[in-house]
Image 1: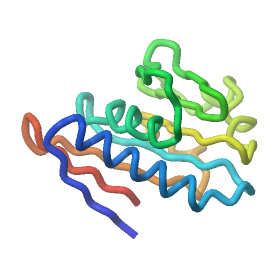
Image 2: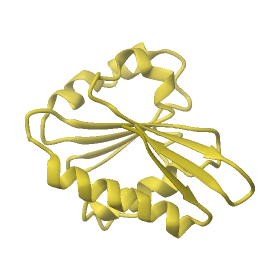
Image 3: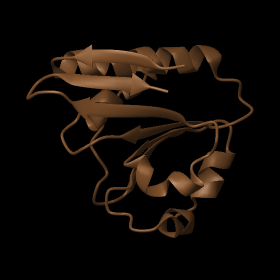
Length: 141
């Protein structure tokens, strides 16, 4: 199942994030944590997408990329940025297994390809590609 979206500004990118969050809230079973792995180059729209995603979850907090602190938590929503992670073991040392084991949690991992080995099999992958200065392709797998 691949869903492709093309966006040309930040509000369209956020809208795709809100739509995915709405779908998750409707289908979340409560048996497993919900995990999204985001992959794409710098500036391709990952954080902007997550701002819309958080809005779709009903969160009022401003979503900022946790590049330097690696992880932010708002309630049961975890926003993890693996840009500075060199080895998946670093995420394990931060309690990643415990976080993904809680069925109440919704986890979004930017630069998830850096820890692909420890990402659960039920991960929804979202790939971002910058097609031009403003145009992006977002593929949800």
